[in-house]
Length: 491
Image (cartoon, rainbow, N blue to C red):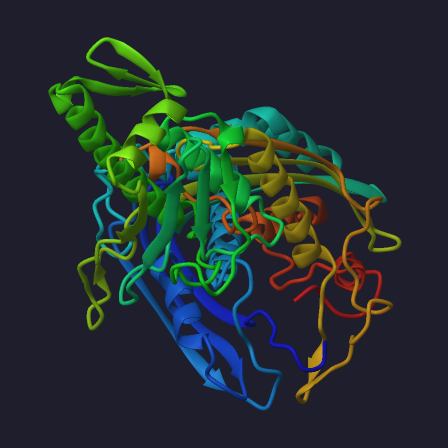
């Protein structure tokens, strides 16, 4: 813990304005991030924090900027979210404060300004290539958490109580894959063997996220064979170079590479079957585990055997390169990412003003990730991201002082245990487009991204002042100080 890099600490100066009806007019965010002793990934992290800084909202005037600063602290590096959670936290907490000043609920403020298809991002990118699910995930969370009722109810009932409850929302969007300035290529090797079984070799690593399961599903659906026909090899250095599992890119670039390879295999098999049966290639159709050759039904295994008998080998490397976005680095204007995932997390907490303890009661986490390839794995990702966000928001603090981590073991560095976790309800919204494999988009990092803002807003609502706690984590001591239980405040 002393030597490994940590998530980037940020400081934000946020200004946001709206008219009396709550329509946003301007957003400005100036950020500094602690790079530590080495630059490492700091330029990219700073860019992501501000390039997505205005969020999935319609804002006519936007200015965001960030600087990464060398310090003598522990080096900062890649961590799930890559700058996006920090930027979301600053914006979403500021929006809650703005809502309070306007005398409206934070949910209503967000709903009045949320983006829809055809609207522009803060960098001027027109999202006209997909349905924007931001309002849908916002509504799902508000409805299932009963946010509006609880927001006004707790606001009225909390004053004077020892135990107070609060609810918080946080809405976000995240670009899939690397984005502007970094070429992103997915590659795989896909092979049909003589008995009709399929072998997939892809360089993306299975680290518990279920990637191999989903890659196998995509290969099976693309080739029109049953899932149990596909074997996914362990990721080794003999796989085509596909890069690392970061940037929530696995399903997107890996899946598209598989589609490319599967298309080549089908063309190869069509050539062989057309030659063998002397029929038009256009009259050959692939059905589930079968091939229709001008009305004659063959099993996929028989079709594979015929392909090999003609001297052909139905094995190909698949390749997919994300189109380069058009972006002007000098002006910060243009397309930052090729497509997006839209997310919202809502949290309900209870704080004890005598001890500072925060109890998480309910969490609703909703995400529009296009087509959901595997509902069980998606639910696992969503719950895992929400619990990780809870630790980030309420407990985890490396406590770096003059370059040294003070909390360097798990007796001091606290993470949520099973008894700390409240009820987590995973929700998926499906708005597929034609850019991802079968309409799928990323889900790994987005499940964490808005969580820090949601939990912090819930704690502040319970405290009775939106914006009271302005830094993470909202620890026991910080909540206690904010309640007046000790000298100081929660900042």
